[in-house]
Length: 177
Image (tube, rainbow, N blue to C red; front, top):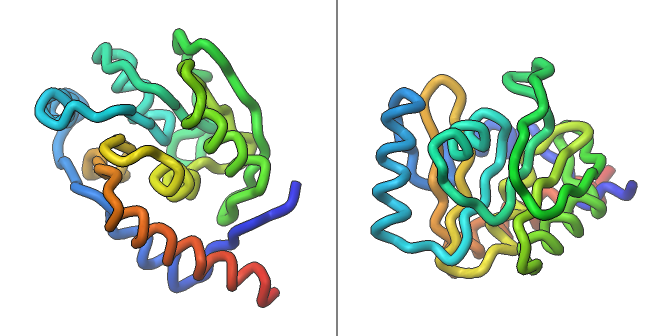
């Protein structure tokens, strides 16, 4: 399970700031607003990262192409989410890293024509970066912002460049070890 990217202390601080639009509010409010966003934007794909946001999307009948979960919420075990996805893939991805296995799973899921649930043994948070980087333009990646709401990332060429720079910093940090 080769590690491709490692989080630096500086990036840990930087990534606490949302990389997309923060939608504040309760689960009900954020889902109402998110449904409005997808109705207006008509994204080619919706990618969900995180157990709580994925559960909320499913309960609000939002169809997504890829769901990335780790069966944990706020670093505590959570019951597995039952989703009607066409395929389920299991990967290892330790906290603070992105593994080659996880990148490959995200990329393959995004390129597939079926809905895919990726279950991570470890931590899924940083896979948001891989999801944005490998998603087609006009896709939307959504993840939770603890105690605040959800973050909606519209995939654009500019957003891909921003994420590529973050990944490059992480790759260089791993190589420096």
